[in-house]
Length: 240
Image (cartoon, rainbow, N blue to C red; front, side, top):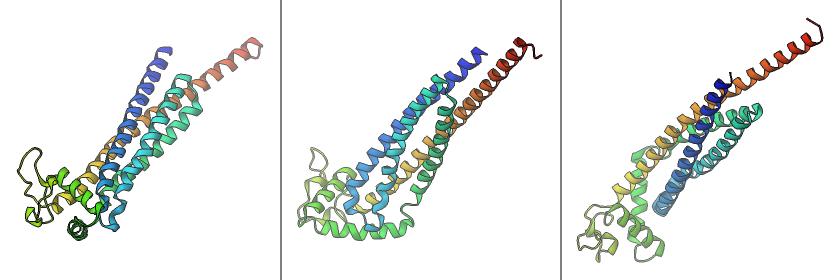
């Protein structure tokens, strides 16, 4: 019986350890994509400014997962039924929320044709005002440098080609226009984020099932001990 207890505790403990690592992954994922998408937000149509919402939500989810994994480890080592039961419930709720967030990320942009059309209109204004507003210049240079593109319609868009259009340490110029790459970058970011969040939610479901089994094990063991103590008491007192 003691050997079985040790095996169960070991499984639950390492499950919580891996869940803490998943929480770190979620936290890192949220921070990375929040920064990346916010850098492009000035060039994104106002109707789609909520694209940053998904990575923002993954940050508290990752943090919460790390915290509850620590509590889960404590509940496992201390063998406290209430801690384990609460941990199991919270973990299952977090799994449901995370799954919902992951699925919703695929619908943030809606109709891609409509999104690309509105994005092109916004980008056209941003590129036209490159020399007149600092915000426009900053975001255009960022887009051209990071996505390796040049101009709204290609290099011919510029009278004087900006340095951000040049290949690093070279006179070569990026030839591809920027709007298609911007829309693809945002779409790919949302898809990668959604897939990652959904995939990372699967171990949480497994962890909640393992913890549920452990909570059931603790409760069953407590009832068994209570039954044995009552039996011993009745025998000692001559009631049986």
